[in-house]
Image (cartoon, rainbow, N blue to C red; front, side, top):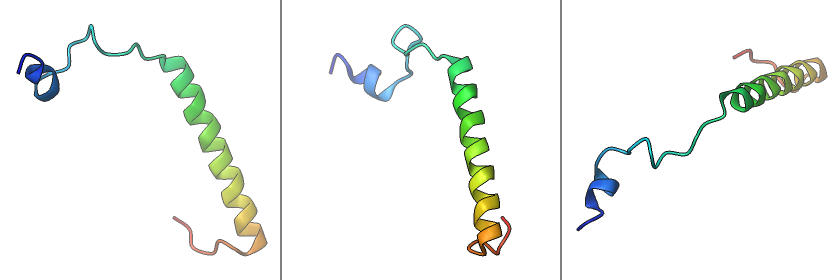
Amino acid sequence: MEGATGVFGEVRAEHAAPVDLKALHAKIGELTLENDFLESALTRAGLLSVKR
C-alpha cells in the first residue's frame, strides 16, 4: 500500500532515468539511413513494389 502511488500515480522526476537526447537523435538518424538504404535496395531488386 505504501508504494501504490508510485505504481498507479505520477512518476516523479527524481526516479526517472536521465535521457541522453544526443544519443537518441544519433540512433534515429542511423536507423533512418538504414531504412532508406534497404528500401532502395529492395526496390531495385524488385522485392518491394509498393511505396509506403
